[in-house]
Every structure is written in structure tokens, then in C-alpha cells.
Length: 384
Ligand code: UD1
Ligand code: UDP
Image 1 (tube, helix red, strand yellow):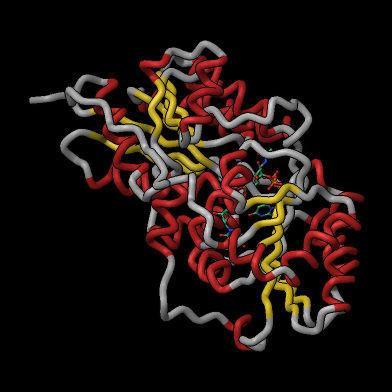
Image 2 (cartoon, rainbow, N blue to C red):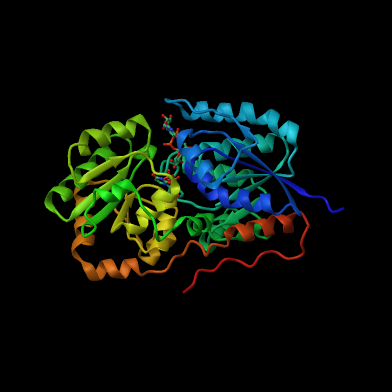
């Protein structure tokens, strides 16, 4: 009988869970080729559990590491210490990690210590700036240094990996699994209570913000701009699901807490978030994943950062880098609210990030790497 490949997927935060969920479900349903072992570090607790519940994923191991004031050292050391013995016991053929969190890097490092092959989902994204995003840029560079198999979402991310001399035969252009997940969550009969309190004729702006380098003054500056725009434009309502980090919550409540057209709510589960995003007028965020999803939904995004590892969306016109300067953010918001023809151009640009078949390509690439199938997957190409 043919040997099955034992694939251990390790992830710990909300975005990793959303983008790994389609892969876990794919591995579990292909009994013929794969044995799937799911390990969560729970670097996030509540936000991770929301995603696990939605996709009905029951982890085989839960490292349960989250602390309310966790440092990067806490996360790194706990993941390495607790994951090591699990790798020793399970001996997977390959460990899959996703993206650029501290869970990603620490799990890759632990797999390396145990001489286990590493597959990096969402490989090759780069800003080439060590400080921004911090520490994600180094997490992804270090993870790629440790990896054996690369699932690059776009041709640009493959080009970045080639520049670092990673072997072309182990790089597969797959599209981003965020789009696979999005295809499962959008619904026409969607309802959420926050929509009950918003006049449907108003322009709803959806906001998220959590990056470490934006904590403190940059975040405050953005919130001041939002406050002014809401004050000056009675047709605008803001929905902001606030990240549970106490450093984010405090500033959001302080600056935005008392304006009736600004709705500060708890993090939404992914079905609610995708559907509310689909009903928004535009999105303001420093999130990575949302930059990939918004083009699929035809929503312009003001990116609250000075750079991005997702330049494809900027080139396509959907993403605009506005940084965190209060005046610049205000001007960019006003422009989207006032210039309808510009808005329509952005909303109709192409989606460069995926076609919903990234999981299929990733599973085929793993099977190909381990000689279970003879053909590598065809590379993802965005529709012109
Ligand atoms: C992490 C990732 C970041 C990713 C983000 C997604 C790192 C270094 N950062 O940043 O790349 O963009 O997740 O959201 O890996 N908390 C809770 N409950 C939760 C989640 C977080 O209470 O479910 C609070 C805790 O107080 C925790 C704090 O948020 O200490 C920060 O969480 P942490 O994972 O360290 O950083 P994020 O900013 O979420
Ligand atoms: N998201 C969610 N609920 C929210 C906000 C975001 O489910 O209240 C989803 C969003 O659709 C995207 C992912 O979370 O898939 C992005 O996660 P986050 O912004 O936390 O991390 P990043 O992508 O910046 O690493």
C-alpha cells in the first residue's frame, strides 16, 4: 500500500487560522494521500476559537500559550518548548506553517531543530524593512530561510524568494487561501445586529487596526482623523471591531468612544466580518489579510501603514497606502467619499490575490514533493 504523508499544521492566531482552515479541511478529506495532525499554539485565544468554531476544526494539540500581557519572547519560548516533544512523538513528514506571526517563526524553528521538512504557506511576502511590519517582516524572512517548500501566493512573492536564492523547483505559485476561505463565508441572506442600527442609505466605513508599530501615537492620529471625518460628514457611519489588545482598546475608547455614528464592537467572527466588509463603502486597516480580501469584495482600502508586503493590490488600484499622519488620512477619506468616479474605478479593479483554488494547488504540491503524484500544480494567474 502507498505510504500516506503525515502533515502537521501549526498555527496560533486569527489570520493564520482563517487561511489554514481550507487546507486543514482539504487534508482531512483526502484520506487517500494524507494523515492530518492539527496543532494550535493559541497565541490568540478567543479570536482563534472563533475561527475554529466556524470551520468546525478540532485541534489534536492545543498549546494554550496566550497571556494577557505576552511578550514576543514569551510566545517564542513557549512555542518552542511545548511543540518540541509533540514533534518528537508524532514525527510528521512535514510541518506546515502560515504567514508571519511569532507562532509561524517559532514553529518553523522547532521543526528545524527536529530535522522535519517545513512548508511555508504565504511564502515570499516582503517589505525588506526589518522594522515594518515589526516583527512580521523578520518572522517571514526567517521562516523562509528555514523552509523546504514554498507556497507563494503571487508571481511577485515567487520573485522575492528567487532573489534570496531559494530553489525554483520548490516554489509553487498558488494564490492566497484567504480567497478560498472567503468563497465559503459570503452569504446573501446575512444579518447582524450592528446593521440594524445603521441607516442603510449611509456610507459605512469598516475599520481595523492592531499592528505593534502603530500602537500609541500613530493609532491616535488615525483615530483623530476618523473622528473629524465623521463629525463633518453626516452620511458616514463607522464600524470598528476592536482588537482585544488592551493597548488598542484603551486608545479606541478614549478617542472614538463617545460619537454615536462610530460603533466600537468586539472582534467579529469571520463570517460576520466578511459579510459586513462586503456591505461597507470602504475599509481602513493596517491588517495584512484584509488587504487581500478587499479586492475580491470590490472594496477600496486605505492602508494605515507606510509600506506593504502586498504591492499587487496597490498596483491594481484597490489599496492606497496612506500611513498614519492625521491630515493625510483625513484627506484620503474625504477623497473616497467625494470623488465617485475615482471610487468606482477602484471598486472595479481586478483581484490579484487568488481564484479560490489555492488549497487544491498546495495539496497537489505537497503530494508532488513526496512523489505521490507525477505533476506539479499549474501556477495561479490572476484574471486580466
Ligand atoms: C499577532 C501577530 C500579528 C498578527 C495579529 C493578528 C505576532 C508578533 N503578531 O499580533 O502578526 O497580525 O496577531 O491579529 O505574532 N488578545 C486577547 N485575545 C485574543 C487575542 C489577543 O486577549 O484572542 C490580547 C492579549 O492581551 C494579547 C494581546 O492581545 O497579549 C496581543 O496579542 P499578540 O498575539 O501578542 O499580538 P497581536 O497584536 O494580536
Ligand atoms: N477578521 C475577522 N474579524 C474581525 C476582523 C478581521 O474575522 O473582527 C478577519 C479578516 O477577514 C481577515 C483576518 O481576520 O481574514 C485578518 O486578521 P488580522 O487583521 O487580525 O491579522 P493580519 O492579517 O493583519 O495578520
